[in-house]
Each structure stands twice: as C-alpha cells, then as structure tokens.
Length: 357
Image (tube, rainbow, N blue to C red; front, side):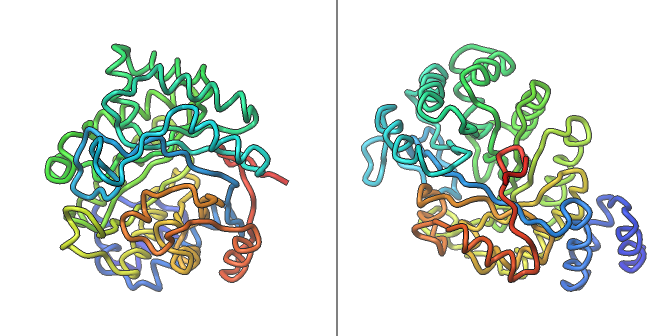
C-alpha cells in the first residue's frame, strides 16, 4: 500500500478504508492532503463556500455534568453562571427580529431543573416572534437527558420537539466516540451509541443534523479515525448529516489545560482527512469562532466549504475557553473577503443548505 496509489484512487473518486486513512494521516505531506481535500471539496460544492446569517441562544451554562475539557460549565450559584428565563431569551430573539437571520442555534448546559416541556414552550414562543427562522437546537446530550427525564422514547421526544418547531440538530456532544476516552473526559454524558442512535432516529423523522468531533486532547489518531468512520457508516444508512465540524480543543480554564493545544498544521491535516474520509457528508465546516478568522480562511484550502455564520456576538462557549475571537461576529463583507482571498465564492445558505439570493 503506497501513498501514491491511495492518492491516485482518491483522485478518481475512490473510497478510503481505515488502514489507508491511517497511512495518509500519518505520512502524507501536508501539500498532498490539501490537494486531495480541495479536489474532494470541488466535487461536492465547486467554487462555493457557504455561510448563513445566524445567532446563538445559550439558555444556561449551569450543567449537571463536569466534562474535563469544558470551560463553559458552572454550578448553580457559582460566579459566572447564568440561567436565562424564557422571557429573557425571547427578548434576545426580539432584538434580532429584523437582523435577516435565517437560523437560531440553541445549545447550553444540561440544566437539572429544565425539562422537555420547558424547551418545547421556548421553541414555540421563539417561532411566534420569528416564524421564518429555522430552529437548530440542542446537542444529542441535551436531548437524551430532557427526553429521558420526560419519560418518553427518543422518537416521541423528537416528535414533540419537531411539532414545536425544531427543524435541525447542531451536532455537539459527540466529543470522541471511543468509550474509554469518554470515561476519562466526559463520563457522565450519554454513550457514543446513544449519540449515534439519537441522530439516526432524527434522520428517520426528517430532522437533519450536523456532526462534530472534539480533537486535540488525550485521544490518539486511531480514535479520530474510528470516530470519523462511525459517522460515515451512519451517513451511509441515513444520509441525514448536512455537515461535519471538527472542533479543536481549547485549553484555557478547564481541567485539561496542561495539555496545551494542537498546532495549525494538525488542524489542517484534521480538516483535510475529515473531507477525505467523510465522502458521503456534503459539507465540512471550519467553525471560525473556534479557529479564528485567519485559520478558518486557511481551512478553505484544506477541504472546508463552510465557515458557519455571522454569529452576532451571541456565543460564549469558545471565548470562555480562550479562543481568539472573544466577541465573535462577522459581517457579510468580511465573509466575502475571506472566501475571495482563498479563491472561492461566498454563497449564503439556510440551515438545510438551500442557497439564498
């Protein structure tokens, strides 16, 4: 098995197996991964790089779980904790009613006192204010907890949320699927199998989703490869993932901070290999809030074809972990300049990747 032979087959649209992926990831030069990932990106989206007009709602950072990589979580009553009432959240939405946003992205902590019916009411009331906006809401970890707490099956819980107006799931909480790694970094969260099963159930009900992977902490390259292949296998069955988002571990203010952070080279190799392994996932997102604007622009040369959205300074998850973008917001001219500088054309989309304008 030679790198040259694998590359030749990929250029012809061939599919990687696990051993080939490991060899490429470990030994292929960075320029080659960039070339192969750029060609794969072109097959999916041509010269387009997608973005949307969105804002985040983060109802609370109070959380039952104590994940070692998390800089966001607080206990009730702890300094820095917040717990917005529904009325406070609705005021945040009302302030953006005329912003042109097509998506509200809702994630937060797993609050011990908030149940499924609380969030169903919140979604319904958001839709009353912005009926045209797509509600993309809750990680599988949040959904697993709120649905179990309500005593419902996954399918019934998702059906209730869909009826309230939830159209899509953002994809967080996947971390690394390997259960030994999960026991070390997030032992209280739902299992990898539960995460995958919830997304599979959502896809079967017409609720699309994204998928993520948290990398750059205690996991090995083999764990990353296993994670990506499990996602590819689920996508083969359902076709319900819109995009994959590799999430770089940020080391400030958490229990794993002594590990430091991975290099930009590792970030680009991870993006490129994600594009090459996930040949059935339409889009690879370089989440600019996490990477910073310069690295997100560089990512467009390593297979990424989406940079997320305008955000409007509405998320704290990565700023609290030390990300470069402490007040995250992008204007449309900035997005267009980033894409043009990398040789691409910025295209506005909605949550489901329908092009706008």
